[in-house]
Image 1 (cartoon, rainbow, N blue to C red):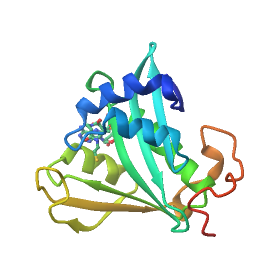
Image 2 (cartoon, protein in one colour; image 1 turned 180 degrees about the vertical axis):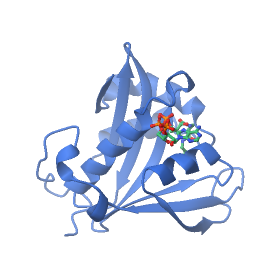
Image 3 (tube, protein in one colour; image 1 turned 180 degrees about the horizontal axis):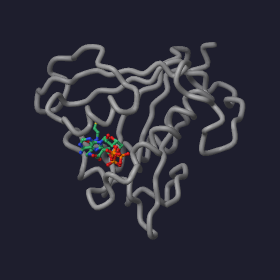
Image 4 (cartoon, rainbow, N blue to C red; image 1 turned 90 degrees about the horizontal axis):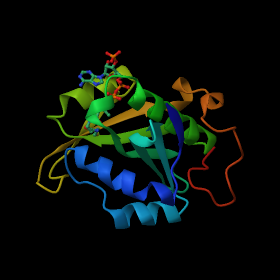
Length: 170
Ligand SMILES: CC(C)(COP(=O)(O)OP(=O)(O)OC[C@H]1O[C@@H](n2cnc3c(N)ncnc32)[C@H](O)[C@@H]1OP(=O)(O)O)[C@@H](O)C(=O)NCCC(=O)NCCS
């Protein structure tokens, strides 16, 4: 297995994987936009030539907060630590960008995902009514990255944020 940052050559694989996301799937146009603009970190896990999992994190300038926007692993490859590896790499990247916290939303009925996030250090912080396209509520979860993540576990060498890179609140 190999973890790496996604590029435009991964578009087909990223869109294909989204079918395994419970709802509000990211479109090809959305991935294109995210790949082109520097406010997102998109990671994939390759296995046997194909993409077995992906994670998308958004960064907003000056907030110190990163948002896990999508995390999905192909059903054939689940329970092998792929999501854990993707999330660790995404969190390390967020720390490199000086984010203090990772936030996410999850459907209350997505018990496997909630269990996964609890296992990886996230706690439930609240809820947002009428969050998903079908009107379902979201649970919000959060993790303090300062306390939990060592920057040197990044899947790429630690580096200074690019000029103007978001999330640069000290
Ligand atoms: C949630 C998801 C990303 C987990 O991916 P994964 O690669 O299977 O997760 P990992 O193998 O890294 O699991 C790490 C730990 O999380 C927990 N976990 C993962 N999947 C679980 C499940 N289905 N049920 C209960 N606990 C689970 C376990 O504690 C697991 O450790 P273990 O296998 O040693 O018991 C995957 O099930 C998925 O893609 N689901 C569909 C998309 C989705 O719901 N994404 C999240 C939306 S917010």
